[in-house]
Figure 1 (cartoon, rainbow, N blue to C red):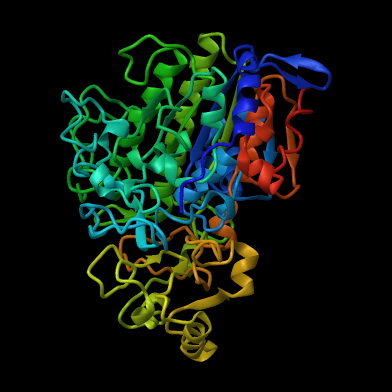
Figure 2 (spheres, rainbow, N blue to C red):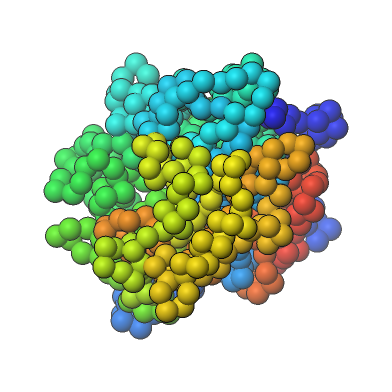
Length: 579
C-alpha cells in the first residue's frame, strides 16, 4: 500500500493560503485579531484535574495555595476545557499526531510508536530495540511490526542519536534516523518509510510551512519528526529532538528553570541508561528543549547559532510530569498521587512546578519581545496517565492477581515480531493490549480463549473489555489487507481493568496508552491576553486543536485532510473568546 500523498486539491488550497500566513490575521467577533504565532505545548500526562488542582490549590499541598502560578496566570486570559479526550489509543505517538493532524487512528494510521502493519516489510537492519531486519518482497503484502521510537536512531545511547551532543553532527534531528532501521514499503520499491511518510494525512506544520510560515518543534525522539507530515521531511524549518532514552550525561552550562545545575549530573545514583529514570535528571533533559523554545522566541534557531525569525508555529513536549506520575525511584521515593482526587505526591509537585516555571520563562520572554498579544498559547497533553489513584495500580507479578497478559494467552497466533516468544520487539501492551493476528488465526476463536481465562473470579490477565469484529470497526477501520481492510488496525484490543498494566515494570505505578478516563482526559488551555477567562464543559478532543490553530492564523482548517474526512471542528469558545 502506497503512502497517501497530498491531493492536487489540497495543494491548491495551500497555495491560495500562502499570501495569508505572514499577516496571519484571524477574524474574531467581527474584529481583527493580531495573532500571528502559536506556541503549542504538551505537558505529557497532565490531566484536566491536575490543572484544576495546581491552579486552585489543594489542601495539604503548598499551604493550600496554587502551585502552578504561571499556568494559573495564563488561565486568567484563557478558555479552559474540562471534558477533553485524547486519541484512543492514548500512546504518545498517536496522541501527538492527533493534535497536529486533526485526525484519529482511523485516518492517521497511527496506533502506537510500536504497532503492526500487514503490508510494510521489516527494516533492512535490526533496530536498536530488537525489531529484526528481514526481506522485502516488492509488490505484495509482507507484514512487520512498525517502530517509531528510539530504536530507529543511529545510536540511541547518545543524546543526539548519533555519537554525542557536541560533535560535528550537532544535535541530530532527522539526521539521527538510520534509514536502514526503518520499515519498508513493498509498493514503493521497498524504500524506507520515514516517520513523516508513515502518517497518512498532512499536518498543521505542513500546511503552515507550505503557506510561507516558519515552523519549529521539539520532542523526545527523532522519530517524532512525523509531525512534519507527508513529503520530504522539510516541513519543519527547525526540529530539535534530543533522545530521551539515551544515556544520561552532564549538560554543561544548563540550569533548569528551578535553578538546578545539570553539570555535574544532579542524580548520579539513578539508573543512567535513560533520562526518565530520575525525578531530577528528567528536568535537565526537558530544559534542553525549554531553552530551545526561548531561543526561538528571540528569533533564533533552537541552538541560537542562527538568526531566523519567530516561528509561526512552535513548541515542545514536557516529560517531567509524566515521570512524576509514574516513577518509583530506588532510594528516592514514589511519585504519583495520594488519593483519587488527584492530590499529588511531593515528587510529582516538583515536576509540575518545574513545567510551570518553564512556561513562566516563556511568557516573560514573549512579553519582553513584545509578542504576548500576537501569540496564542495552547497547553495540552498527548496523553494522561492511569490510574490517578496510585493505590489501584496492579502490574504483572508472579503471585497475582495479574500474572499474565492477553498477548501471552494467545501468543501462538501473533506474528513473530509481535510475539513474546519471537525474540524481537514484542507485543504492543501497556495499559492496553493491541493484538494483530497471523493470517491463519481467527479473531473470534482467540477472543474465546481470552474470555475463558478472564472470569471475574479468576481474571489472571486483568481483562476489562475486549473489542473485536464490529466493536473494533466502531473504533477503527476494519482490519485486513487492502482493498478489504486497513493493514494497521488491530484484530483485537483489550482494555484492562482500571489500574492494570502489562509493562511488567517494578519502577512504575501508572502507564498510558489505554482507553480509561485517566488515560484520555487531559487539560486544554487556550490563552491570549485578549481572551476573557472561560471554563467549558462541552466534550472536546485534542484533535480539535489542529483546525483551531489554522483558523486563528487565518488559514483554512479544511486544508487538513483529516478534518475533511472526519469533520473535525474548531474548539468552541476560541474564535469568540475575546473580551
